[in-house]
Length: 437
Image 1 (cartoon, rainbow, N blue to C red):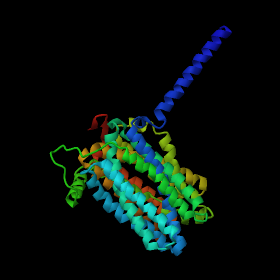
Image 2 (tube, one colour):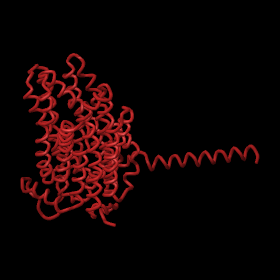
Image 3 (spheres, rainbow, N blue to C red):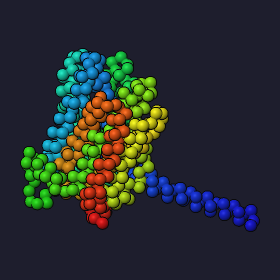
Image 4 (cartoon, helix red, strand yellow):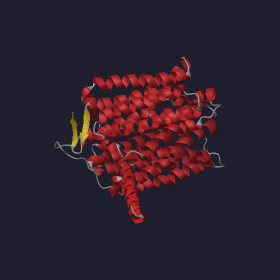
């Protein structure tokens, strides 16, 4: 073969290798197709920017309460006071989202959240030193966040095509996990400065303007009247939504497996005790590990949209979550614990995408607000109940037993339940909706 022939052959081989690399990236890189929809793109950017600020405030508030009270109990109340509004307003806000224009509801509830941040800033500037006021503002923001989240989740299937809903949800969760990494880092630097709490709340308020702008630019989304009437939001409407879930094993299981995963296998309340016991008190990497794993999984999630057996995929993801959590509880090296928790975080992102997608595509549009309301209540309440379960078992036996037992119990219960509920195990989606094997 001549030198020219060898060069041509080498170029063709290089071109084939490059083509294979590009095909691999298209299959596995983050699916960005939903970003071609301008309204969804603005919503994602606004949500992601605002979430960074929200995480800054989420760190600043308990630190400020500690600085004012030096009471672990009062710091613990920061998480507790937010739970009832999230559950209550999540359920009722979902009913409202099914009866009014969701875009407008999202804007007004987001505006209330922003005003709550301004109030936190003002009470700090005027040095009011009132823990009760801070807790009341946390409760206010929790309620408005629940309503906004219900409306936002219900809007996604109206903004993008059905086959792009998993990709849109992956983008949402990935951006949220990036905020969970960046926000606390920013907060940690700000609250250590003189007037640091003021800086933290100012940053949150400024970043949240992006969410308000994106909400104003959303197209109108009035309820779709498919049966002639739109039910007035109220307790009866909430009950109808819960009855709809209880009568659909696929939806019931999507909520049930999430509750099991969070209540049994969420180890975060054990981090301080285990860090003190094994890692000389180094706790920061433990808190960051799950979010970091979720971000990495999101960036390599192009395959998620192509999976049709979503009930089965959701089950596998939660089983992987439980196995990784149990393994991390046994590990004695910090790097190994962080690595296993990162794998758990990756599995959690996958399961979250499929849970959300099943809710958004299986339920009719007239029920999506209420489905998202229940979703918010479960997502917010499950980890808090998990903290209680893990802490109580650790006090009764040991932190290691509580950590490992929770992960293994999650694997066993979810596996048995998924195999027992055949419609869920066999559930699959198509581009036009859902079907069964």
